[in-house]
Length: 318
Image 1: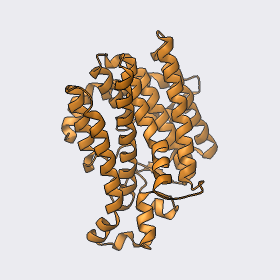
Image 2 (image 1 turned 90 degrees about the horizontal axis):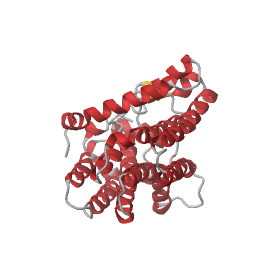
Image 3 (image 1 turned 180 degrees about the vertical axis):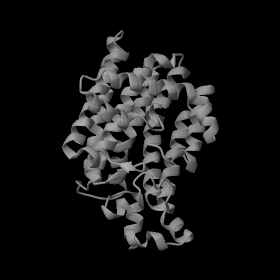
C-alpha cells in the first residue's frame, strides 16, 4: 500500500507534467482569456488518478510515459467534464469547498464548458497519436465510448430504469465510472504495443477499479470522509439516488436527517453490504492484475488497489 508521501514522491514528476500539459493546453484554447481562466480553474487540481494509471501500464509494457502525456490529459478532461455535468444534474452547489461551476457561471455556461472539455479531449488524442492511424482510431473510439457510457450511467443513476436492484446498480456503476478507468488503462497498454490479452487484462482491471472507487465515493457521502467533495453528508439520500449505500439506508428507513446521530456501530452495519461490494471489485481487480507477468508494473498496480481503502487517498481529490 502507498502512503500519501510515497504516492506523491513516486509520481511527482508525472503529476507536474500533467499540470504543465494542461496549462499549455488552456493557453492555446481559441476563446477569450476569461474563459481560459475558467477552464484552468476547473482542470488545475485533482488526484490525476486515471492519467497515472495510463502511465503505469504504458511504461510497464515498454513505452515512455511522455509519449501518452497528451492522451492522458485528454482522459482527465473527459473526467472533469463529467464532474461539471454531474453537479448540474445533481444540483450540487459546491465541490471541493468551492462553488460548483454552474453556481459560479450559470447552468448554460457550465454545460458549454463541459462540452468544450470533451471536444478538447479529442484534440489532445489526435495530437498524441497522430503518427499512428490505428491507435488514433482506437483512442477516438474509446473516448466516444467514455462519453456514451458515462451519459447512460448518469441516466440510470437518475432512476431511468425499469428495475432498481443489484444488477441495475452494477450496470450503472460500470457505465458511469468503470469505462473511464478501463479505457485509461487499455489505451496506455495499446499505445505501448500490448497484446490483445494484455489489453483485456488492463480493461477488466480498470473496470473493477472504477466501480470500486465509485462505491467508495458513495460510502464517503454518508460517513464524513472527504466531506469537502459535496460539503455536506447524505446528498445521495436527499436526491434519492440508487446505489448500494442508499439502498441499505432506505431499506432501514434511515434518511439524511439521521446521519448526524448514527452511532459508529450503526453506520458500519448499514455500510456493510456496500463495503463488501467494494472489496469484491477490488479483489477482482487484483485477480486480473495477478494475470500479468511479475514486474514492477504489477506490484505498482497492486499497491494502487490496496491504497483505495485508505482515507488519505480520498480527501480533497477528484
